[in-house]
Amino acid sequence: MNTQSRVFFQRLNEVLDDQCGAICDIDGDDRHIELSLPSGQVFLLNFHGPTQQIWLSSPISGAHHYVFVDEQWCSTRNQEPILDRLSAELTQTLGQSVMLT
Image 1: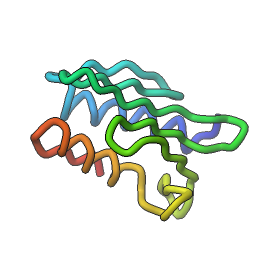
Image 2 (image 1 turned 90 degrees about the vertical axis):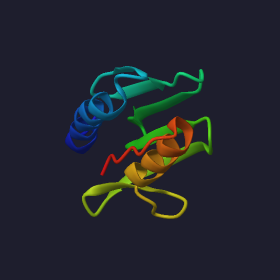
Image 3 (image 1 turned 45 degrees about the vertical axis):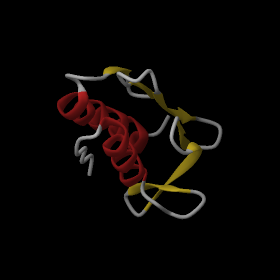
């Protein structure tokens, strides 16, 4: 595990708890997060050590892989930052603004 991923998961846990903790079940540590929504949908994020990537499993858009580039975690598909995708999908799913960036 690297420092960038550890810091990412610690900060994301705090922000998710602050913005979604009242309505979502959040379970996580410095290597993974499981975010269960009231609808029963689950977002999973984890650090994959062999590839040094963060993997996101989204009930909205499926599986995504992210690498650390220019001080942020960006998609291996299109360089989209992970927090942009997660913010948009949580906003869509929860029906309220979720700003993780």
